[in-house]
Image 1 (cartoon, rainbow, N blue to C red):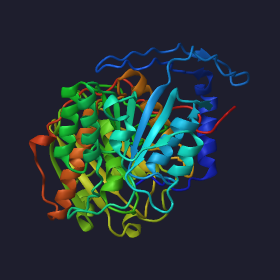
Image 2 (image 1 turned 90 degrees about the horizontal axis):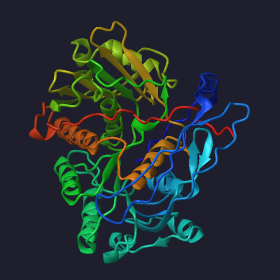
Image 3 (image 1 turned 60 degrees about the horizontal axis):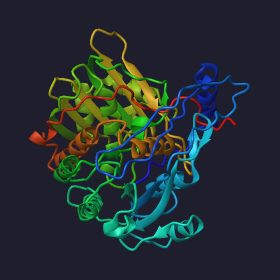
Length: 453
């Protein structure tokens, strides 16, 4: 389900605009030129355009780079309706979006779309007719069949009418459609980059198989949500090698299955804690708590109360009144990393709606903290940075962060949902032994949220 990005006050948007303009962030415009992906597995090229200097007063749009080949995209969706993830991501590939205050038009062409479901409020027929997109009857057909005539694939299986299993997980067929994409690759004798929206699969074994399949076949794979790359207030980017001791993410959403928003919180936690000293070395155990067990975890020090308060304090949606008086049924996932670092994500529905982060660093008295800012629907501009990174990934074949991050968050989430079902049993598994190096840049958007032309 899409992040609703609950209504923010107009003053928050203006604060971001003024803060970034006055801080000088508006004086640098980064425009990334890119070249077409080559037609064979593992061969991709890209280049960075130099930074363009302009003052806030006379900030003309920089001259565009010489046009590269437009990449042909296929979109395989669960559903295409207002506010669905496919609506936001595919819509941005077609209409463009905001980047650094200016309109950015992706150098791509969506040529085909397939939707698993077509409810009454489906918008795909009109959208495809207007923008000359073929509405395919199958995932394989969307890719051009055995001839595979597209350069990249969007797999956006989120929203729609799907059942829950006994662990409260939405049975989205991401894995099944991924397998169909790979079958086309195998029959055609070539492969192209694939983006998978949100977590790879509700089943961590399927998620691991997806990553292993991409590596074996040699095609680039990117997955994840918009949270790690959306705007942050303040613009906190912990340096690589930060000696984190503990990290906490707070949020508050109550729609559908618990996993729907816990994956976003885990992505927030992971994109911060992966920057700790020694890189990501994997997770030792996971446990999910609910109700009074969450308060007991805070009282016992398993979750540091000060970090919970700081994370909530960063968010404009913070409710008045005491936390424990307001929140009726808290839920949390506790993560113990192999190197001893501790992490926790807490769903505190009545106290906050934004995602806040706070963390303690060894040898540093004051914790660090920030809010992961989510501009409201219908625009939901937190999809701007995600779409930007997807486009760059399609052109270069290089994801902005290792897919192992999303594999780890997918695995933690799956085990946490099992823990919740099994009375908060501590979950351990070799599947949590996922290691990788964090990217040099977090890739989150800086600068204005609103257009400044």
